[in-house]
Length: 111
Length: 109
Image (cartoon, rainbow over all chains, first blue to last red):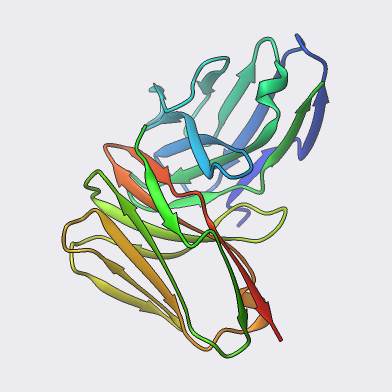
């Protein structure tokens, strides 16, 4: 039972490049989330998906898009990366609006 | 967004001492959660609280959901070296979770 998995673990991009962060969960949870974590700021919600086929903006959605591909997978896309998007990105899943289980994170640097 | 004020920001304690940290908000939450994050890892859930006034324990950890639903505290008794890490509170409201800025705990053997 892997829980929540994320790929890649590390990524370096140049300004303007695009990339997709992948997330998958094997706990059959309905809800999935994408957060970014910056020093001294805790975790901030980018987008979430309450159920398969739905997505909603969180606190800091600008510059990102998401896709809930199926119940297991929720991807985050940066269309044109900016240095301000340098951060650690965490995916999480939960059953309805209960507790959340986090993946190991993707460390992204945008030069 | 919702503001969660978590204090203290950091703590340096001797092994065996008890630890207390808290979280306050200007908003009412339906659920309060406490997480621990080790370096290079994602947060791991420690305790979840679902009702105002609820007091819940998990081993040496005890947490309470404040009566006003705007605050929560976490106590760790008899700290050990593996308690080192960053502790986050989180409040849940309308499908979203809002996190505090974390308390960094260092345990000196």
